[in-house]
Structure formats: C-alpha cells, structure tokens
Image (tube, rainbow, N blue to C red; front, side):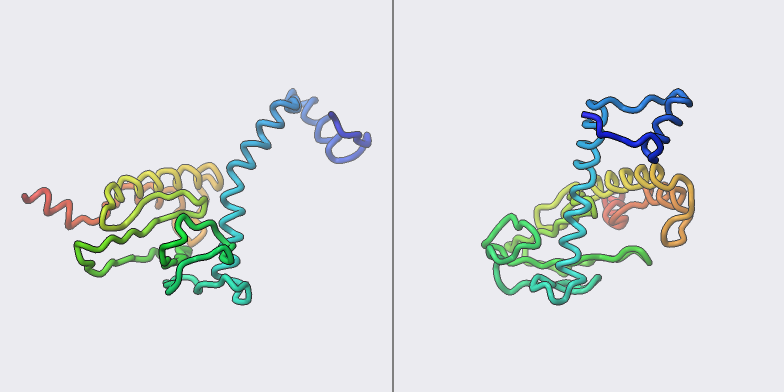
Length: 194
C-alpha cells in the first residue's frame, strides 16, 4: 500500500535520512495506530473549535450566544434546529459561558439558590473533557479540578517544555505551583476548626 514516490521528493529524502540514521520508517500497522491516536486526540479539539466559532465568533451563524466572558441564558429549550452542539436534553433551558483565560483567571460565583431547586454547572475544557461540576448535588469539584490541572501541566510540559507560558507566566513552573492551590480554603478551614 505504499504510494508511488519520486526519488527526489521530500518524503523519499526524509526516508533515506532516517534509514541512514538508523531510524526505520513505521510499518503500515504502526502508521495506522499513530493516525488513529491522532484522530482520537484531535477530534474533540477540532469539534470544540467549530462550536466556539458558531457560539462566540460568528455573529451571523444563527447559533451565536455571546462573546467571551459573558453568560448567555436561553429562555427556550433547544430543538433540532440548534446544530452547533449536541445537547443532552431537549427539555432543559441552558445557560452557557465561554471563559477566555489567556490574560487572567476568572472567578465564578454562584448566588444562593433555594435548597429545593436543582441546578448544575458543567465545567468543560477545550478537549471537551468534563473536569467538574458546580451545583446542588456536585461533589468532588476540587478533586476533578486538581486532576485537570495535573493533566494540563503534563500536556504543557510535553508540548512546550519549560519555555515561558503563553500569557507570560513561567510556564510549567507556574502550573506546578497551581497544583497546590486549594479551592474553597474557607471550607477546609471550617472543617479543621470543627
């Protein structure tokens, strides 16, 4: 299944150089595995970018909700005409918020809600990974957030190494320090005092 290659094209030259350096080209099975893993890793990012385009950037999309850092509340339920993202329920009004964290962190505060009322805020990263929930039944937000932070610092280290971060931070060093930041320290102090 090898494609016909010219003797002097860049792929053939790279193959010769790899062979000369003792780095054999991957087999068809290895290439297939690499392609599958790249697809599985990249698809959520690409799909989420498409949703971001529809919901935040393209004001003429018919699906646009609000700019970054602005909450959008839908006064209706979603229907089959809402095609930018698959929604889990067609009988639930949604609110959405896309946070731009490049310049600084954002604080999300939740007003008091009656105990009889149910609410849930799903926290999702750019890979479409749900790393936590805030809500009337939510538990383990801090654990989920710490896990997300750990995965994030690991990914950053793999991608950019120890270069400066994209917003001018010290990069991996800063992110590692953030692993020790406690969410809701007042609750932890209260538990300690009780």
